[in-house]
Length: 134
Image (tube, rainbow, N blue to C red; front, side, top):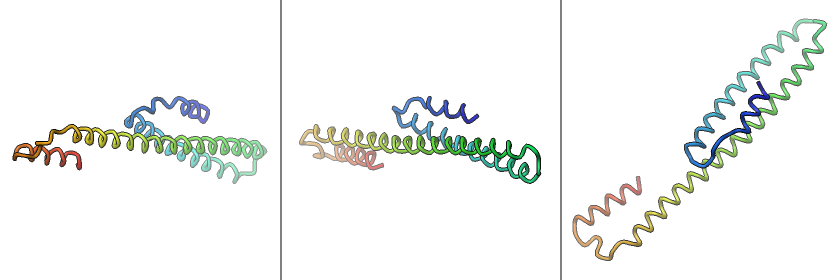
């Protein structure tokens, strides 16, 4: 399961758009929850196994250590990928806002000088301003 998840993390998909990054962030949140569930399950299996004095206790302890280390490694990879995705989402959100502001400024720079000279053009400007500030 851990190897499968590590391979899946390397095939993240597109990070070009904000919706794609948002989908990936949700995927990572689900993966974190699933990983936490598995770690709790590992702990639940180890506690009863450790309570019994069996001849295979050393093997179980060694395997559980390996499993816990692998799960910890996966947890670190997930956290690093999620941090990168969060940063990417912030960058894409900023770029989108900057593009919309740039378009608004460009539109205002190209307005004729007589804009705002009558009631209709003033109402249009107010509506555009309200849309921009919303």
